[in-house]
Image (cartoon, rainbow, N blue to C red; front, side, top):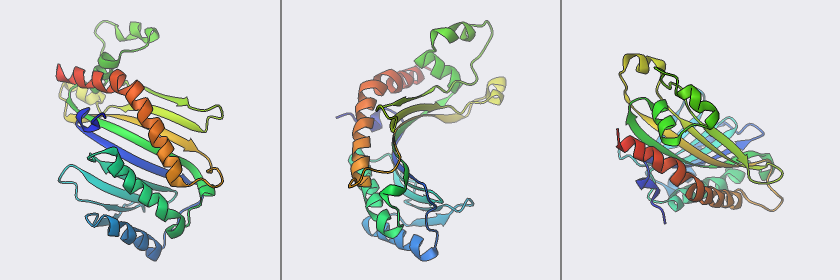
Length: 247
């Protein structure tokens, strides 16, 4: 079994459920839901409301590994930063999905999309975009542009989405996010920031009759890990880590 926490400085296992209808926002409903979650995870004791109106319950972040859950107007999110293993995060996500039909009145019919995402952060002080271009390369059509004398790459965030079925209801998306800007390049002064790699498998639309959110998430997790291990780790994550190690 691959130890995902050995591939990057930080890694995350997240679940996102997007709904067609607005979620309830009453005080008793929100607090009741989070209190039930807290019974299973007593260390999740930090509750607050964002300026956007989102409700959040999370663990302390000081240890570098923590759980968090948020309720937005039309989205329920569950995440675990640097979990000991994927299954630990899955147990949290399944609990959330088990509770929402009863406590937040979310029906499988109300599902706009369900996501299972794994992401990886690489700390690097330097030009993120140039590093990504060096580590992963560019397509042949862009090589001539990258080779312009005296030029520097200042925005290169490759991403791709593929359909995994004929109806395009299940899709996989790879996205790389850099945090270098033109100001950093112009001054030659780079803060230590994270290059993030996000890999998501998403199921669109209402669930099939008799199918639960938890069953659907388990299938998305299998698809995600199969693709990650067979297509992403050796071709994206390890090249990035190797390129950073040589700088």
